[in-house]
Length: 244
View 1 (tube, rainbow, N blue to C red):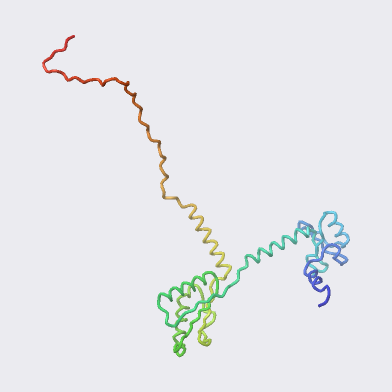
View 2 (cartoon, rainbow, N blue to C red; view 1 turned 180 degrees about the vertical axis):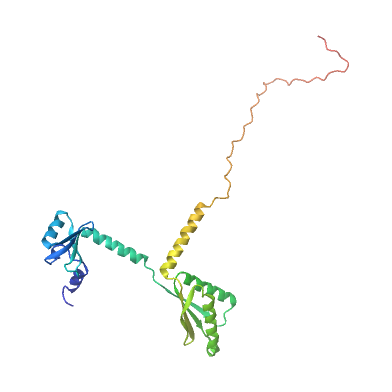
């Protein structure tokens, strides 16, 4: 390994700045994108120093090279953040696998078909595999028909990328999605957003709980004096007259 080769490659991948620009003159661009024109490299370095900026070579293949006045540290940080965000949002297609038996019952077939549809909606490829057992290996046409049936059932979401092929005891077919991974991911995100907005705007059917009123306390009655006999109630005597 040649000493310093790795460091040299790193320097080549980055633009030349300030004193590393070894040309007699450059086409200078101002910090706001304005065209200054062709100037001597010494004058460009002086302008960069006066503005407390860096002189960065942005188009070395041009004649003369194009240089711009900028804050190189800030520019490099923003470029790294954009590259990191692009890698985070990059979607990779995944190859899913579904295995079938030649004598599969209708319920299991429906379940497997649902899995294939879900994978295709997510933008992933699906490898559908039929596993032959025993004498089933002598009936490859039955496996071919089963795979063709699966391809027809999910044709709305994917297409046959690789036709059914015999591989030992297995028969394999690959189905590709109609939508790309990034498109499916963006569509799923938009559907979740609309669903959340609809749930937030939907009125609630529950009535507000009634406010509980405090129970009325009975009015206390005055207690009777100790030892006092209750007043006797006399019935009027028939035929008696009251004296005034």
